[in-house]
Image (cartoon, rainbow, N blue to C red):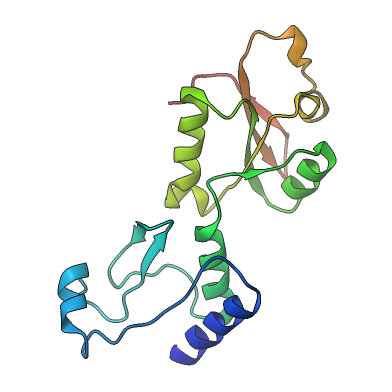
Amino acid sequence: MAPQYEEAAATLRKEKEPGVLAKVDVTLNEGLADRYGIENFPTFVFYAYGNRIDYEAGNFDGGRTVIAFSKFVKRKSMPAAIEVDECQELKRRTGLNDLNLVYFGDFEGEGFEAFKRAGKNPKISKKFSFYKTTNPECVMVMLGINPLKSDLPHYTALVRSFDESPILYRGPLV
């Protein structure tokens, strides 16, 4: 596994991605093993923006290939949701993934905070891509709703590449 890991680290450096792969031999640095509770080998500890956000000792659920390591780091290094201002670009991006959650509205308030929490949840973000936009035209283009005639402050929709799509969620985001 070490060669794939090292090649993925080199690929990320070359692509100037925000994520970094590093390895530490805790048999030579025993204090680190104690400090981070490492008991199994190999153990993957992931940090984003200085916070330990995804840690399962000895249980990395990604593949053991260069592509899998790179994809894991890229995905975990992204913000909770990618902001997209152009409606056609939002349609294009949601067409690339099977499952997407899209937030339409101002980027503030309880609803938006709940949307961001969902985007940072590893169990959810592993399956869904998250997008956000403040462009009211996108509500009309993608959901068929005139935001000027609606009393909803924001919209959240499930956009799928199969079956009926998009599906508007009308309940509270908590």
